[in-house]
Image 1 (cartoon, helix red, strand yellow):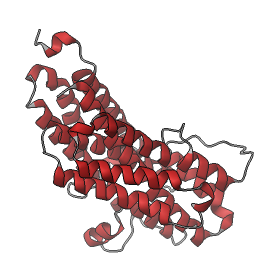
Image 2 (cartoon, one colour; image 1 turned 135 degrees about the vertical axis):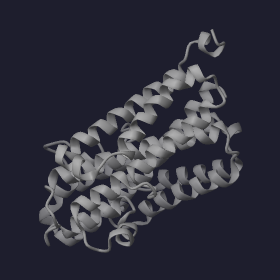
Image 3 (spheres, helix red, strand yellow; image 1 turned 180 degrees about the vertical axis):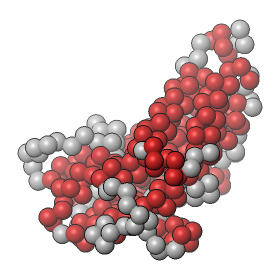
Image 4 (cartoon, one colour; image 1 turned 180 degrees about the horizontal axis):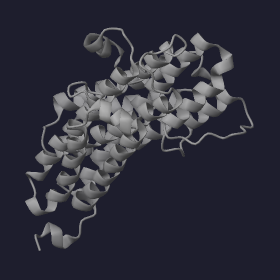
Length: 317
């Protein structure tokens, strides 16, 4: 596979995952605002921005809702805004149009035009925009799995999705646990906040099936970080990442692929053998920072191995 194609498929997947995650987190925080009232708006939105990795303006010159609508949703120059992510995904898909299915292109193009037509002032009045982003992204993933050959190109899409999800969930969990100190049980005032964290990861119902509705911060951390079978847990993403990289590596020389697979394997081992009691005792945020650092190392090694490698490596020199 050409490095250009691999790079475009990888970033197309990362951008779509980021857009879907952002839309979901915004939707959950809008619900939290309704429950807490306007007095908590700044605190809730500030936490949301930190969880998305966005630097907030300490002294906005316009109403906060307008600033957020522009920064998080409509700013084409922000790599974290929904519009920029959808535009980036579509542009990368356009560059490899011949490598993806017609159904994939039509769905992504349809989502792109829905995003372009939305106006900032409509976002807070209707959830249709946020729902369209989430449903459109899920539909694209389903179409991709159903219509694209599960070869190297499909595996690069899985790598992009898994790596982006691991980073985003680790930031979300880290910011939440930094604000709400761990206690044996969630207090009544924090109960909705913990539900919000689970819903931000589409995890509330799955958590309740695993642990009942007894919301304990330690169990929530264990579920979102270490659960091996929940699709939005960090460990699940690490497992999927390593599996996809091994499939890609099987099509190239072992010497070229060994470094990126080794780093991904190290991250998977960090999560596979992690014990929640030890993690919490050593500091959850410190542990999550290690995971994010390993994600960055995987990204760098991936590009060096498959995207920006010297011609000598391709020739087996």
